Structures are given as structure tokens and as C-alpha cells.
Amino acid sequence: MKPWILSTAIVALSAASISHSEQTLTVESKPYKNWFALEAQMEAVNEATISAQTSGRIQKIFFDVNDYVEQGALLIQLRDKQQRASFEQAEAGLAQANANNVDAQSKLEQSRPLFKQGSLSKGQMDTIEANAKSAQAAVIAAKALLKQAKEQLSYTQIRAPYSGIVKARLVEVGESVNPGTPVMTGLSLAKLRAIADIPQRFAPHLSDQQSFNVSYDGKSFEAEKVTVFPYADPNSHSFKVRVEINAEGSQLFPGMWVKLNVPMGERTTIQVPSSAIIQKGELSGVYVKTGSDYQLRQVRLGQTEGDKVEILAGLRNGDAIIEDAYGHLANVSNASTSEEQH
Image 1 (cartoon, one colour):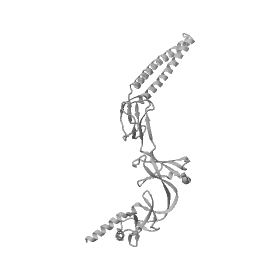
Image 2 (cartoon, one colour):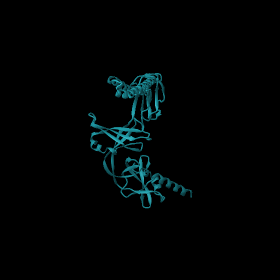
Image 3 (cartoon, rainbow, N blue to C red):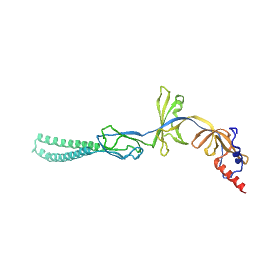
Image 4 (cartoon, rainbow, N blue to C red):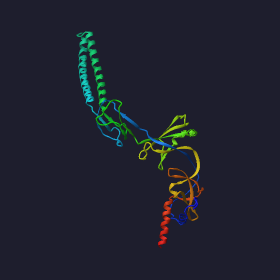
């Protein structure tokens, strides 16, 4: 069989009459965006290695590699006796400072009328006022120490900065850590970005950044944010570009290869729904109306954009085709079977 001729058996079946309920459409050449596809690699927008912020021994690890964690979830608990003791000491210091301040302010209020009456000298009044101000300052200092101690105590509970999955666990229970010791790496799958290098000759088209999209496994994801590095690589003379997408529920993961589609102006072409295409081996065809029947005609396919497929050859403006090619083939087969049974 010649490569440009479809199976005669299918063509014969397609010549049968179809149901009037089948949906058809008339094809027409229209201007569409011209896309240039580049290889791109996915990476997480939010990926971080969490480090300890205080010293201590690891008491418990609540999550492991590949576990999903919610934002704010407790990941690791450090031994906190020293930090808790400092916190309680700061609480006691604040209580003492408050008591001294209340006493100093009370003496100041009692001394003011006595000073006006002349019962107290100016030197004595100045001393009382100084003691009152010192007591107020001691309260402020005690509050600051308590705040610092509370912060150090909170560092013994290492929590997730955002929702995501654990990529790596870097410590074990019983290990001692110091400030700066890496303990766990995590990433969020909700926000991903595609990283690609765009050749220098496409630089004039980088202005239409918001039209970029990422495609994978027949699905297309619109760009939410595009960042083009403001310089070309001195070796490859290409521009690095990062395209952020909303990847929730997409089955995309960091490290995967995808297609980054860059708009390159417009082209006039015919596009049809992917459901109108029927394939037999390496050949593709659509059902075209010829008189009162429909014949299967071979077509040459171009780019796919969402659920639309570009037709490079085989169709002309005004041709009427069936939208559901495989549904039509099933109807024809059922009709042929019924006739044979009768």
C-alpha cells in the first residue's frame, strides 16, 4: 500500500450514510499564534533547606522523605529544657520588674504633694523620680528578655514554612544540632516553573512574555509569571527564562522535561478538534462530506494546541467534517452489522 493512501476497508466503511444527529463543522483558515517549542525543565518555586536556629538534641522527627506536610506543621522537636528554663527565668524577671515599678511609681505619686508642701528637698524628689524612671526601664528590658527567651524556646520546634513534601531528611533522633545545622529539605508542588534557554535569534519575541505556555502530556498550562534574565550566556548566546505556572493536580514534578511554547507571531492555517482526527498506524484522516455521504480523507498534521490540531494538507476552506470521527466509525460499523444480520 502506498504511504499516502488509507486502508480501503476503512474508506469503504466511511462511505455509508451517517446519522443526521452527528455533529459537523465547516473548516476555515484563520490566523493563529505561531509557537516555537523549546525543551524546558521543571523546578519548584518554593524549595528550601531548613536549618536549626538554636542548639539542642533532637527528640523526635515527625515526618520523613516523601511525606506531605501542611504549612506550620511541626517537623522536628528539639530538647528544650535549657530554653524553657531561660523562658521561665525571664518570666520571673518580668514579674519582679513589674513589682518594683509599681512600688516606685507609688512612691513617686506619694512624694509629689510632700515636695509641694516643702516636706521633701529637691534632691530627695530627684532621687525618687530617677528611681521611678529606672523601674520603668527595667520593665521594658525584662519584656525584651522574655521575648527573646520565648523566641529561643520556639526555635526548639522546627515547623514547615509552607505546605509541600519532604525531599530529604538530614538528621536522626539523638543528634545534637547547632544554629545553622541543616535538618530537612522540602518543596511545594503547587507552584512550579519551567527553566529554558532561548536562542538569541528569538530575543525580539521575548516582549510577548505573558503569552508563554508550558505543555506536557497533551495538557497546556498558561504562564502566571515570566522572568527573562537580562543578559545572554557568553558561551551559548542564549537567554535564560523562567516561566511560573499553577501546577496543582497536574502530575508535574521538579526535574521533569516539558515543552515551553514561545509565541513567534501569527500564521494562517486550518485547525480542527482532535476528536475529528482518526488514525490508522502512522496515517491520519478526517471524515469529509462528499455529496450525501462522508469519505475518509488523509490529512497531514501540524502542531497541536490544546484540543486543536493544525492541518497542513488535505483540507480546504469550506470542507465539512465530522467532529467525532471514532463515534462516526462506530455508528457505521454498527449499521453494517445490523444489515448483515437481516
